[in-house]
Amino acid sequence: MAGSSGLATPPLLPALSLVRATAGFLGMNQVSVTLTSWVWTAADGRNDIGTGTPTPNASLPIGDVFPGSGLQNPKVIGTSGDPEVTIDLITPAYYAADGVTQLGGFTPDQLNPLDSPGLEYLYVLGWPQGPRNYALSARGVEFHRPMHYTLHLIAVDRAVPF
Image 1 (cartoon, one colour):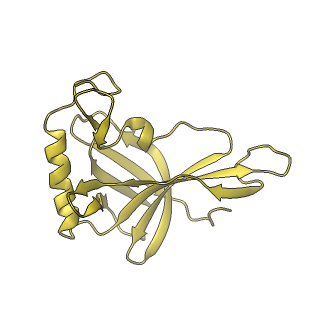
Image 2: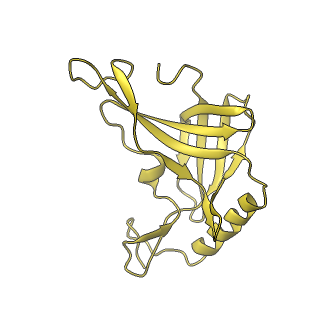
Image 3: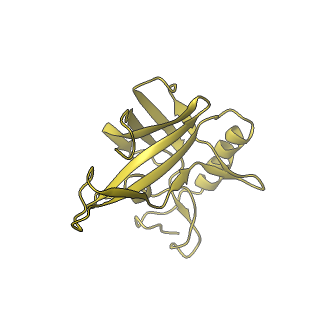
């Protein structure tokens, strides 16, 4: 079972995903996390962030699926007032026997998309006090652990889109 990285899918990942989803299902993880993107298009056709009109692009909710209940929130370390927060225990992608069909989890490219002209990526955290926008901090994403990934985020306290 090779994933897109060419590595075998660790057999524990589906079970870990279920355990992590159970924590969310039981109400232990209260904050939703969604990776959103904005496409900026200026009147002259250029795509420069901060110019022209932004339109929302596809969103990617982050979490694990609990059977019969859908996506559950991931573990967020920090509070809504913190300038930096950590999203921990994100399950790496795991695949079907064909090695191509992604059954769950997330790939590094899904969590940290490549920069592209006119695209701005933000993580929106749905705190009980209301949503707040974040971007990857200088620490970025930790992909070196085989059983989970970690996102390090910094608050974006400007109007989005600005």
